[in-house]
Image 1 (tube, rainbow, N blue to C red):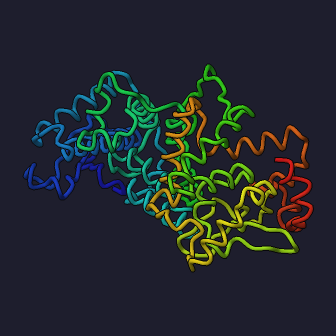
Image 2 (image 1 turned 120 degrees about the vertical axis):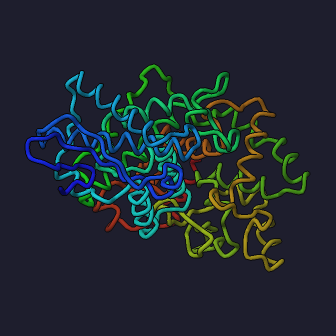
Image 3 (image 1 turned 180 degrees about the vertical axis):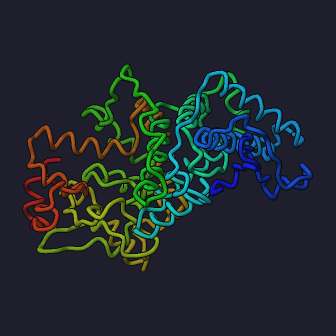
Length: 434
């Protein structure tokens, strides 16, 4: 038989399900494999039943690895018999097409994940994005086990959603020794937000969409499994004028210049007057600040291995707002340059997954809380929303806004042939209106 977990010894007799015990569990169970009668002589039905039992057996093996249960071979077979009886009573047979099974044969979930992550790394996806995918894949593996992707069913998709809804936030840091089953039993803990749950589902669904494009599968059983909660109110993510005045007021000098942490001051102001992302500003080199055609500019790029941008459109040159020059940014720039420093903010260190902006992000959260502004949706990234909101309100030409913040124009004509706008135009028609 093409399916190694389906056996037929004699014409007219029932088919048998065969389970090959994983090598790491063979010493514990004392066997290499075992067989179980399906009580069925119809080939098509037996294939579906055996595929379902294969998936179920993999979950049992995973629970053994996580020390949730200590089974003997007979106990494993008893669990499988109970599962088979449920299927028989309900007359339910999982619909798995034979071509799906053949395409995905010998490709496990972990193997698929590695192939996917390698492909994203190869085409230049940011490390932070790849790590996010890896975290969601790891969680899926913990929930359904490292099974053949052909044996993953719609029930697995529904189960993953239900587990996500019961998981606590910061599970790896707060509960590093607990298994997924133990985590979902915890009481009085803060659960994952709808946004985080949605992000996990998007990443997992992206994995299976990729598997379809690569020819490993023909369906994505995770698509459409999460219902979006329409009761969730929209969160205003931009700062109001009053909040912005408070953030950029005298307290900022107290928190930065007077505390001998000038990087806090200038990174905050650079983002506030450009809409640039936190890490884009934090990773700047001294050489990224220059004067072109009489205009001081900031170059956002990934010209070295320790720098990254989110998208290709993120490579851009931004005219510095006159306010920055009036506040003395060039004095700071020249001071760092005269010290022969490579980085514009040499006090910052790059973190493996979060880049150079980690310390600033943590400080800014505390700063907002001290000002009484800290609330859901308000963080350093709000500067970006604030700039877009302010320019949109003033009806600034949208392509100018997109070029300023590093977004694609969404048009092949504009992206390929439009070119970068003259600095003088971008300064006068966009930046100066922030």
